[in-house]
Image (cartoon, rainbow, N blue to C red; front, side):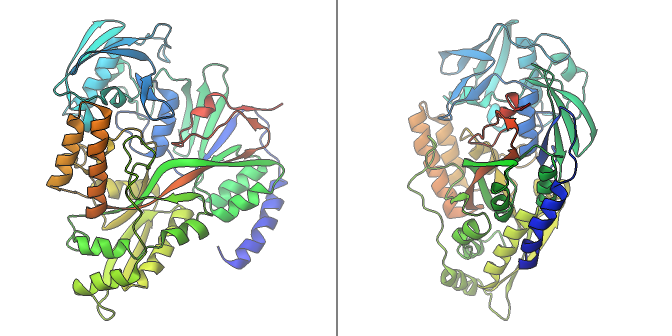
Length: 494
């Protein structure tokens, strides 16, 4: 943002804030990107996952220590490979009035495991050997190997068996048993949900430009914003009496990913040169307003499977230049790479700063920004050299198989950079074979140390969460993983 824009922005905001606001009971939530898929079996983007938590319920969820706890079901361990789940009495019916039974649970997970309809969530669920429905409230899972983390894998939203059988379009007409039901989805950028408990409507509006989102918040056209706002806008909002702004620590992991099949970014020395040229602290301070913590691994150090011994990669421009020279690049023949990101202004600004930092060590980075759908489609298809994204809401370390094991190439997983490293595979498999969480934690720390050496990702930071809302909105609380669960309790003061 230029100095002149910064001077004019408050005037423009105040002028537009004086305009009238909607006079209805709908609570409007501004999004930076629209949900892509409201079928929890196939949704992989953060917005879809957060909204799906409102529409569907799960067998298992997590507590504040990221340990699995019962949601719709309790379980008992009959043997290391035999789990029995008991659905709780009084559970909510599906939104069409049909009861949720153990048959629906089995149908949901069988459809995820169906090779003819591949789901990106299939990776860790492949350990399910059989599922047996004992009655409407009880089913057994038999595993092909022991894994003490197994209950924590059963966090996919549950769908009705009849809908699965008849190919119901859950992706655009969700049918779950969560605290919200679909009210209307008139266009991709507007999604209306209705809270079942009291009929309160929540409308999600996609507004890509953060300045426009803020303008709408000030005018009362939007009631709630969460994340994806530049530091200077947040500073401005914090001074407005009609608004409330709060921050909390987050676990969402931002990173730069590489295409390891590419002849340039597939070279470790090149990845190291890029990693040591990035000044994370400067970006955190000046672009993110200090609202982030440098990261060394996907899991924070305080996660039970985190690795507190790892340190974020140091800024070392001289090492970058030395590595580039050894790889045959020079000022006269600079390394040229392309970097893809979305059209979100914050992400573009971060990418522009990284572009300048790389230029200082002799790397010519071409920045390419696309609308979210195009960008995310390219990443899933492997059409990139470098890209930036974030993992959000990560709870269990099975993410390492999903994102880094050689068997998890898309669409079977999210190994989008095509990492194929026997040591990483072995560490992941060793962790999965651990019979206690302590044994698994040791192996997953090895996984994270190995990834920091091989650099399929450059760890950047864990971003804090920020909440900005109209002053009359109450009941909303930020969560560590950034979910929208607090919309169950949010209300507008009268």
